Image 1 (cartoon, rainbow, N blue to C red):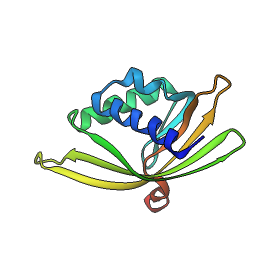
Image 2: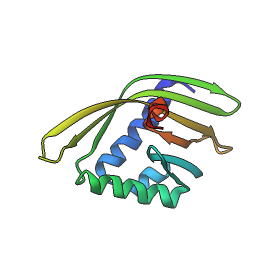
Image 3: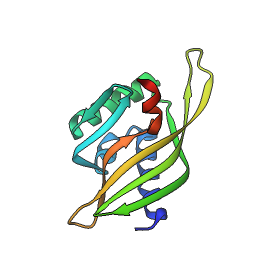
Length: 132
């Protein structure tokens, strides 16, 4: 699969997050997926991941905007590791918009029906190593 196709999937997820369309967002996740909510807190399974995204959106007062930058994709054995710059825009405590960049890591699995679904969503990337 081309890098471009993964970018389209991730950008569709970003748009769903921004629009708070969590039903659409969950179509891109595997039933047994894991989401790093924050260092030390991982949501597993679609139901818990959906709840986590609702809570994250509520925390940012429904104003979180997610964009993607540079991307690298490594495919093997029906899986794909996506390493990508994730850019977050959100209001701080005073309501002033802040822009933050992370180097996220995502793992996708190729399903029998031809779709790629996210199995691991880690927007913190290797920064998780610094959180211990």
